[in-house]
Amino acid sequence: MFLAFTRNGHTDGYLGKLDLADNIRLCKQTIKKLLGFDDVHLCWSRGTYNENSIKIAKDAGYKVLYTTKRGANLSDNECEHIKRIAIKNSTFWLKKTLFIYCNDTLLRLYSLIKSK
Image (tube, rainbow, N blue to C red; front, side, top):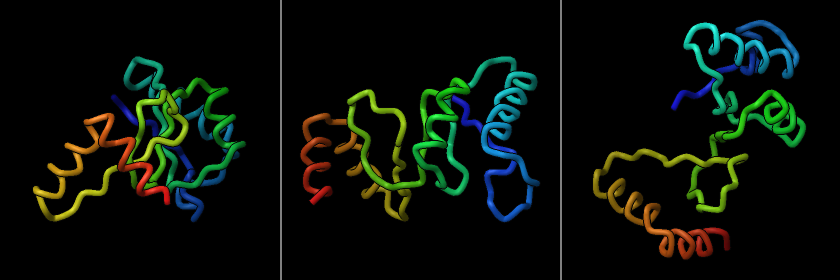
């Protein structure tokens, strides 16, 4: 799996100024040219996105959209707001988290508890 990058998604102007649609289009073209395939994964630069951004990305052909939010992802085919697992200093913590996240029943229960 490859994650797309954006040319100027960082709002500090470091990489220049393009509107989001052009930015995403150029990103997709660059990956196609350099790697030879159409990528369908996009990670939002600095986690900045909204419903309009999602529409633009989907219109460009992206299907899996990653956030910077921490948490569990349910197996509900919802791919517009993929959360991440935080990595901490403990292998025990990671093993426990992966055990919960890989068990659908535990994951749903954990998600219910965390959403309250």
